[in-house]
Structures are given as structure tokens and as C-alpha cells.
Image (cartoon, rainbow, N blue to C red; front, side, top):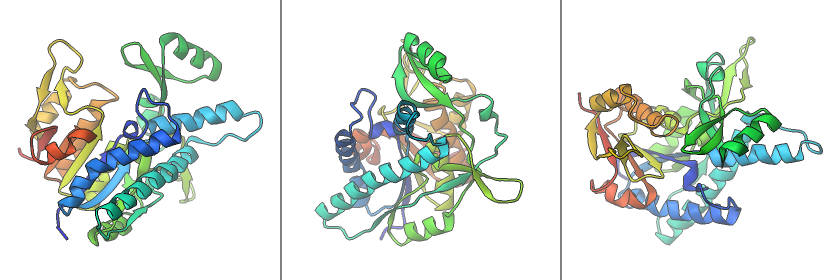
Length: 316
């Protein structure tokens, strides 16, 4: 078994795309397609830990509760995160196990329900920025604010989504167990949706919080724990662009950590989308890793060969 270890962060849109139906059959099909890309890592003998986003899915969980609140008790956001860890983890685990059988490779896949300690006084609780759930027009967003009291912000031109607190992960629980499994070749799905946000209360016990932790930040933290050489951030674009969406947008193929820091300071990346991924990449490289790759599922194989995606290298 190769000693090369990769931490892979899969976006929630990889499983439930922007314009998809959201039906479970579609999510399973998208998961199978996603794992065709992950199979390239397995072919190369990587040790793997995978986490995943849950923005679309946790938004749907909340919508279901809103629609049934007169007959079924509502649940806090932290419970919704735990629920999506289980459901999405189940889909990834089953599909990946089936893929391994096709490849005639004897490796186990496990999913761990993961709690992540955050600071209950994190600034994000005063200024929520994490996008979850479906997209609305401006009129639709105004209706949801009036009807449900949600805070919605414009993520793309004319498209609004609900925003919730997204505190920084301070400590991922069960890290030693996760590393032990990864080191023995088990493929581990952990800190799904960024992890279930918890804090130590006044009497020193764990207590949940209503928030959604950014999965890329958690992946960067988890990558340090498992001593991964590489962090792969899988999103819905093939690579990162300077001034994305503008007439002067420019493709970024390969930059150093220092250059990424300079880009980030200039606010050239889309806030709430690519900018957090760059910040997570910088954190990972600062504290341990060798390189970060940002790309999309169809381009993973080419990115492994160095001909696609954006590479951020750990060079001064």
C-alpha cells in the first residue's frame, strides 16, 4: 500500500447539482459518477479520507421541517447536519464499495459520524455567510425572508440562497481513530458537511450549535490530522480563475502558497464560493501538506497527471 495520503473534499453539489431534481435516484447516480473520479486515486494506491459538503441536502432537510412543522416537531440545524452525514455517507460508502468490487480491490469503506468543536462566540454567529439550500430569485428570497425570517444573500447574479453561521473548526474529534483507519488502507468518510458543530458548555460537556461548518476548512484540518500530503477540493468548476465571471477573468493553473495568499488579500475570488477554498488551501499548506488541487470530478484524472485543475504548491 502506498504511503501517499490524500484528503478529498467533495462539494455537496457533486451529489445534488444546482439544476437537478434532488431526487434520491439522481443523487445516487451523481454519487456513482463522482466515484468514477475517486477511483483514479485508488488505482494509484492512495490512502484516502473523504469528506463532503451538504449545503443542498441540509437546506432540503430544513425545508421538509418547515412544511411539516404543524404535525412533526422541528429539529435544530446540528441534528440536520448529523442526519445528512449519515445519508450522504451511506450513499458514498455503498457506491464506493460497489466500485471497489468492480475493480476487484479488497479495501473497506467506513463512514464516521463526526463532531467538530467550534467557538460559540465565533463572529459568524453575528454575520452568517454559509450558503445552504435551494436558489431563489430576488422576489422569492424576499418572500422567504418575510414568511420564514430567513437571512438570504445573493450568491450569483440574480440568485439568492439562505445563509447560516459557519464557525471555524477548532478541533475534530475522533482524529486518532480516523488516522489509524486511513493508515491501514481503510477509506474513511468523515466530517461530512464539515462536521457536527459542538462546543464545550459551562459544565465541560459537549453541546450542539445551530451552524454549518465549511467542509473545506474541516478538510484542511482533517488533512493535518491524518498527515496527508495532498488536499483535493472537488467543486463544480475545472479550475480557479482570477476575476471569475468578468470579461477579464484569467485561468490559474499553478501558484505557490505565497501567491495564493496575495490573491486572497486582494479579494479577487468569489466570497462564499472559491475564496473559502483558497483560505482552506492556505491553512493546509501552512501547517503540513505539500500541495492542494482544486478541480471538478470529470477532470480528476487529468489533474492527477498535471494537465487540469489549479495546483497550489507549498513553496515560499
